[in-house]
Length: 129
Image 1 (cartoon, helix red, strand yellow):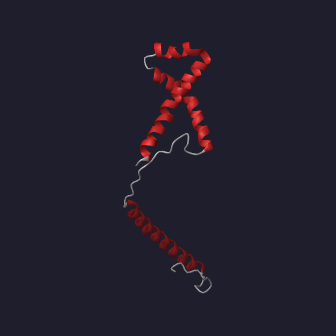
Image 2: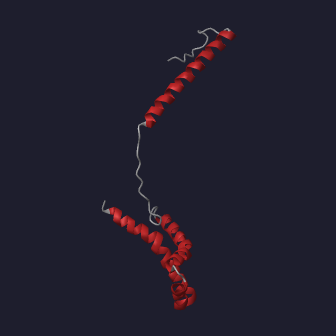
Image 3: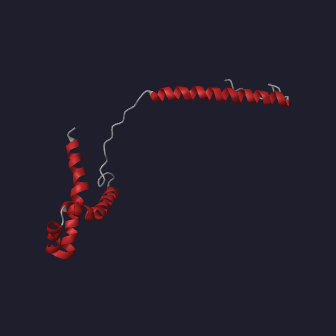
């Protein structure tokens, strides 16, 4: 339980803050402080615009971090799995169907053996075992 808040903070950093930060750095590098403040004065939602600008760079950085250590750049999400009893009932149904198919195959083999006149002693195949 104690790790979940830290995982949530790390996830927020990787998905929200990292793209914004990379976009800010890129704007400052290309156009200086003027280009950086331009997004805050001209845009109605500057953080969303910065997030979309920096997403490709952030995605690339996350992929590189995952190459260093899987899950480092793209955090692993926890998943809850519920197991129901339907699978055991379905398995029993599949087993019954399989038995019927095998019995039908055995009857067809017996019919072929009678048709070709083979004796039971000539073949050591016994499918009922």
